[in-house]
Image (cartoon, rainbow, N blue to C red; front, side, top):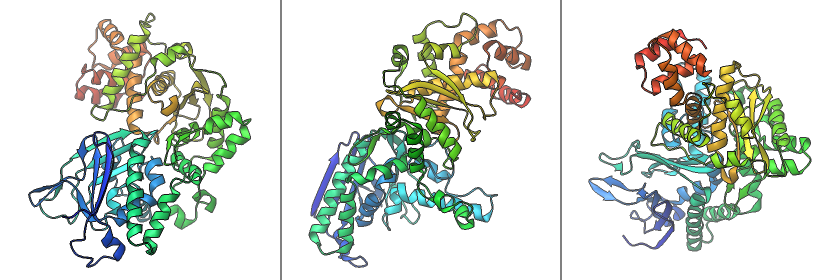
Amino acid sequence: MTITWDRFAGTTDTFAFRVTFMPDPDEGVGATLEETASWGSFQLWVCGQNLSAHVSQGTYVPATHWYLLPFLEWLAENWNPLFHEERLPNRNLDEPAATALIYTRNAPALIGEAETVAWEQEWYEWYQRHALRSARDGGLFPHVVIRRFRDLIEVSWHDEPLTGSPDGYRHSSARGVAYFQPEAVAEPLYEVLRDASRRLTALHPDNKRLARLSRQVDELVLPGQHDMRLDWLAGLRAQPPLRARLEGSLPEAEMRSRWTEIVRELRDLGNGEDADAALAVEESHLVISGSCHAALLFSSTSPTVTKEDVRTLAAILISQFSKKDVISATLENLSEQTTPDTSLQAWEQGYELAEHVHSKLGNRFTQGWVDVAGILQELQVTLLSRNLHDDNIRACSLVGPHHRPTVVHNEASPYQSVTAKRFSMAHELCHLLFDRSRGSKLAIASGPWAPKIIERRANAFAAMFLMPTKLVQSALADNPDPVHDLDSVTAFATRLQVSRHAAIEHLYNLTLMSEFDRDMLLRQVRD
């Protein structure tokens, strides 16, 4: 087929985008003038895989062919949420977005009618903002989803069949996920989007729809996008559930962006310089590449975070500001930004990181248990305690070039035992060491809305950090009872100063007890 226009940007071994225009094989039958001009194909390359490649009627086809104008319009209209919104709809799952959307498509079976409508509405709106198939307009697009993941861009895909696709039609890439610096995705997409819209507008300069597309594309690089992008980063821009909207249970003000509320609190509490530090970002004309501390922190809290908690968290950001370098050399030497490895179980990653830290710290087990509070003090990490209304948040952690390394325990959390606090400190240490974003920044609230994959990794890190193999072997050797005995587990947990629940799960992960024994013991334990 004759190619009338072609544009490629990026590199196929990382991320690349290609659009090609061709004559409409149906010669405009059933399509508008501007849609006919946009007939062609696109290819999306991720880490060497062509996600557009598919098999149709036994033939390999390397590109997705269709009217591309709706796809180009979708990119322009959803640019900011596409690159800045992280929260998944309805439920925070430990899955890439493409898979999570499949799992959460249907509301739970036993919820009411109003809740079902709200669930489906939230899912649909999020899907419309992030899934390529939402822009297919009849085309057979691959199931590819793009979203923010902390200070990275997550591109995920799944080979879920498309309803109505012909027999034998399948995409070549099964399922997967990749993480990129924001510019690596934004720049190729924008270059092709800009040039494709200009090409179509040049063909039909008087077409209002194409003029609107060109205007939207041009507006993406204007300075006025900054605040809107921060809204999406903070995760507080989304509309409340449909049921709340219909019942009027939330005031109209709650339906608008709350980012201005956060900025106001920071400005009211700070002296200017400290508020600026909490709001400082790295950005290009296309995307915020390095989030500010405030956006990172609030993106991991509940979407309905209370005004009181906004003020409390803002006060922490202000109080922990420092003009001078505040990260100790030891903490810096231990730190390394480590993107979650989706090919490994979260507990495997966490265990490896904990063993790595212990190997660098050396033998700290002279008293027979790990003094995590002492280690944090040695690393010059500030320990604070604050009362948050959201009791689902166990703790928060914070660090940056102008923010003291800090762990904040939530006094409202039900986990108030000594062992629970020790586990939280080890959990937050993992965040401080391995979950910093661009510019060595970290601000996260450990709770149900933080990214699941890094929360599970931090839990595993905490278990291995508090119960390293050497101490486990020593404790078991000194205990005459079998490991699957409750008294034996209790003695083990007491010696290492961890909860029995954490001890049981850890011993099971180390293959020191069977799944049956683990389940039997967990039924007996109420830590």
